[in-house]
Length: 407
Image (cartoon, rainbow, N blue to C red; front, side, top):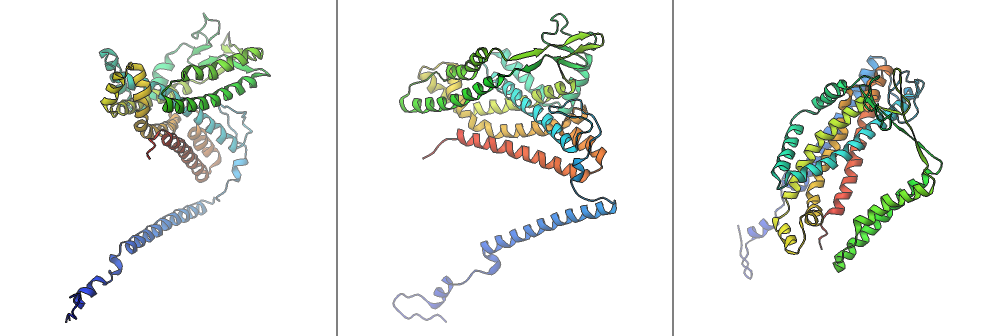
């Protein structure tokens, strides 16, 4: 029974209610810890079950787990390799060849898809009716057809219709631009001279100097409002400086031009039709999605920004380059990262036309030759995981640099 002892007039029941303890399972912290512990236990059990079942199945088939087989000779040829390779090369070498071929098509695909995607995205917002509708048709046609079909279209429907090796395109130019036939593009092969490294050093110096000059010019413009010719300076450092060094070092670069022989072109370097078809399909397919991302990013910027720029006397092109695009990048970069990841992973579809990338020659041919499916699939999965994480890390770093700095 509550007893009021005077003074504050607070009963004993009310005082006890304020100090009453919460039930154990109603405590949010306890409940959260219990749920996390259960999830961790389930995850550990799942991983242990996966490893245990794999070990049991390998034992039932008389196989052991290990990577010693990677030192064995592969015993098969590869028709495109960026490093020295032969049938006597190890499976590690096969892995390296497949990885470099994957990186080659992924890097080139990202570069061209970004270039085309930005152009098409801006063209979609053009006031010119023909340009806008042409960009719209491009986007709708490219993104609504499966990528695998585009690969087949370019490989079987375009490149297979080129002339034979004995009568290729490019005969009238005497091989100056190479020869294009159903066997691919036999291109002039660059041969580096002794002093070409000086030009490479000049390119690196130009890029680094441009970065610091652009950073300084941006801070200077923010502080004083005065503009610095960053575009011309960058062009001069990145392009002009290497050209000057190249000329002064005695043109240390020559080309091995292909010659047309009885059974086709000889000499030069061969670019496989599978590579051309895969790169073209990946580029146009991904560029359609990038174009929509760019269009959405530009439309996300308040129209008042454009009107304010015009009011300050800026014309359309400076307004787009200096006001709209820098702000739109904060919206564009996150979904753009997903498209870069998709393009890299979609390169594995090259197995359909036998282009020797990672999945085709390592998780395909090398797996069949060695019979070590567990180890090879594990390496392949980890490789794509690492590539995706590296790409995401770089894009996140770039996104943080473009983000608004709030006080």
